[in-house]
Length: 141
Image (tube, rainbow, N blue to C red; front, side):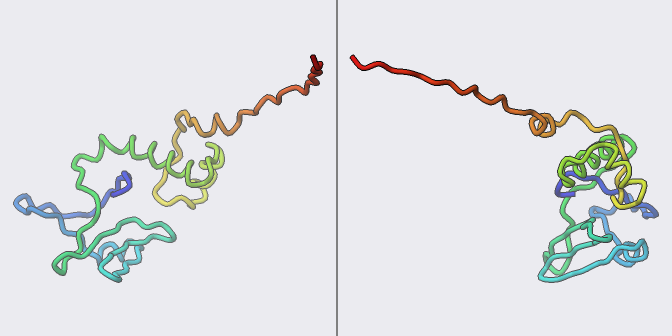
């Protein structure tokens, strides 16, 4: 996708000599996605999450992003990236909060992974040491 997330399509057909990949909108709709095409922009939405986005050129919609082949090598990184993305989207929510949302099915397509070091969270927890009050006396010459 255009934002770095990886989407996996299942039940697809492979045509070796085909130069472009085609996606059936009917198949996406049968999987529960809502497809909208308006103003030259195609959106595939699942709940409140935009899953795919594309633009119209020459009466064909081209999805933003690129094709990744051999998804098994990418899934672990995609899970970690998805967890980090939701962590930031939800105001730097903690691991337990994210795991609870995943168990409730509120974060579509996300798996609860271990969060990596987040500099913003560390900086947000710091406290500033106040300067002590001091009285200075000056004498005239």
